[in-house]
Length: 333
Image (cartoon, rainbow, N blue to C red; front, side, top):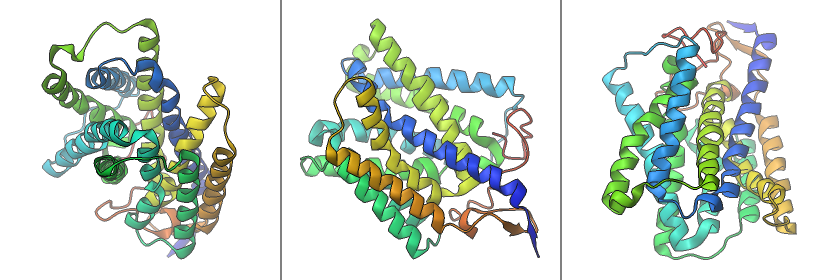
């Protein structure tokens, strides 16, 4: 049995598309503030970043009436793996890849995220795969191939794997925890892991009093790139699916280009602008390839593109509840 739920599904889809685009654009702005904190101890700085983000997100959850949820052993393992791979090891891989090959190499490899999510996110149509390939080409052109060595490439591939974990491991958790709690719990779990890494590598030098510019930079990472972008991304995934959301990862270099121009760090070159145009074209092609959310099953699940996003993800539909309701058994962003 199929029923028309277009009036309910379309606003949710538009919200999901807007949130996915906003999240990836904000992640791209990280490049603009990286120079401000480049002299601060890396792992200590990241631990502070996630500590502040977790505190904000937990406060938001409390104000919204979202109570703690008892997790099963499987869900706890998924959350721990999400924090370990999607946050901690991802940061380690990006840092090491940048040291070996520079930001261009890791940026180029991460530009393949749309294609990888399209492959892992279900059974994408040829048109969706073609759109993902266009996004990858645009992200690669905008980032620049640069130069690097084999260790840099391996670290970059590790970052790509962790970026996929950041999305795919969260999908089974979102129906029960919601975007706020998944973001808060994963950020909180990352703090001790990063602190231990910092102590092992930097010792007591992992922390020091930041300067005013460093404080502003770390605050931007915590509030905008982590708190806001995490919530936007995790709220978008159940609404539009991993394959569609993954297309917007191509906006990361676009965000970096825009931030650099605004901050006066450099004027976009012709390849930068052409790459950005390809990214936008690929996203448009991919969205036009998705099935319109005009119909849904009798269970009321307008799955993105009619496909399940990932094995074991169940049916992460976007419920009617708002962030303030947050019933523990439903997805509650």
